[in-house]
Length: 116
Image (cartoon, rainbow, N blue to C red; front, side):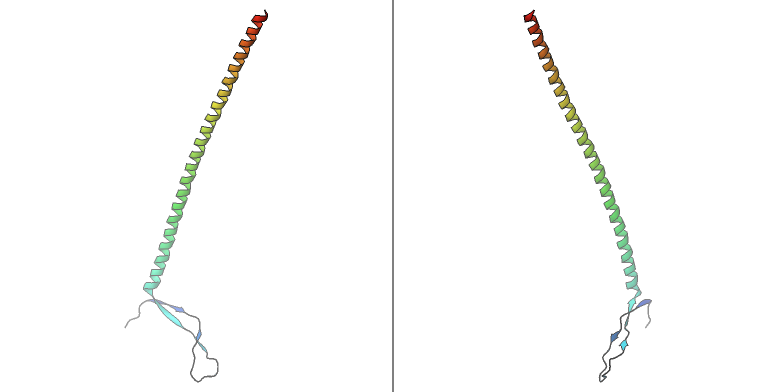
C-alpha cells in the first residue's frame, strides 16, 4: 500500500475517556489526512470563484457605464425638448404682444382721424 501526497490538518485536542480512571484524562491530539486531490480541488475552486467574481464585477461595471450613458442621453434630450418648448412659448407671447400693439396703434390712428 502506498501513501499519496496529502496534507495533515491537526484538530483540537479532545479528551479520551479511560475506563477506571478517576483523574481527568490527558487530551489526545487528533489529526486527519486530507488527500492531495481534495486540497488541489479546493484551490482550483477558490481560483475559479475569484475569476468568476472578477468577471461579474466587470459585467456590473459595464452595466453601470451603459446606464450612465443612457441617462446622460435622456437628460440631454429632455433638456433640448424643454428649451424648444420654452422658446415656442416665448415666441407665441411675443407674437401676441406684437398683435396687441398693432391693434392699439390702429385704434389710436382711428381715434386721431376722428379727432382731426
